Length: 216
Image (cartoon, rainbow, N blue to C red; front, side):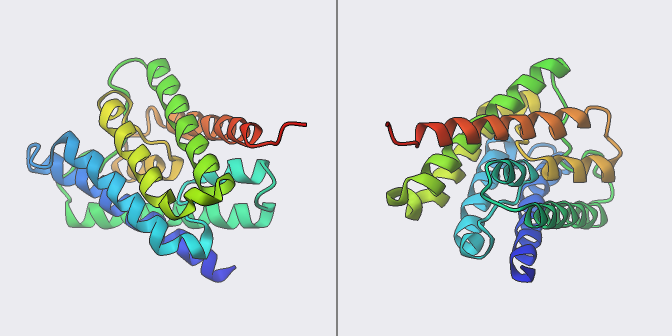
């Protein structure tokens, strides 16, 4: 269990450091990376981490995913709590590292709604639903796709960040949002990025699981 928790800690640290690091460097260099570059960074780092650590912990790196798997009885309560704790600690250390490296950055990759809060809430719910639905279908149920799971899931993160990022931030991950929000002090809309991804992941898990059931 120590190895699994460590894998979740390291994976979430790398995810947040690279992903929100791209946001932070884009901020302080007046857009040198661009929105497209940020989306690609998130997609690539997720792909790499799934292949690097998937066989150790299952490569959750996301409290919403872990909670959905727990409710689906794919994970016991103790493991879920360890995973979520490791993910949040890893994300927090990544944001503190970015704050130390780039002290003039004001946002540190924090996710904030560009429109209304309800607009971003609905977007985050749907985005996380899609992400979790794909995870269930290609990484849990369909064995024939498991070798491609990292690429497929990474591409889902990439295309969702590509089209929805400018509106809601395309977090899909409470750990990814809570860390930069706390470290940067931008916690005003944090509830959206804690609640919507969890609800979306739960819905995505159970719909994907239902579709995988054999017809009687």
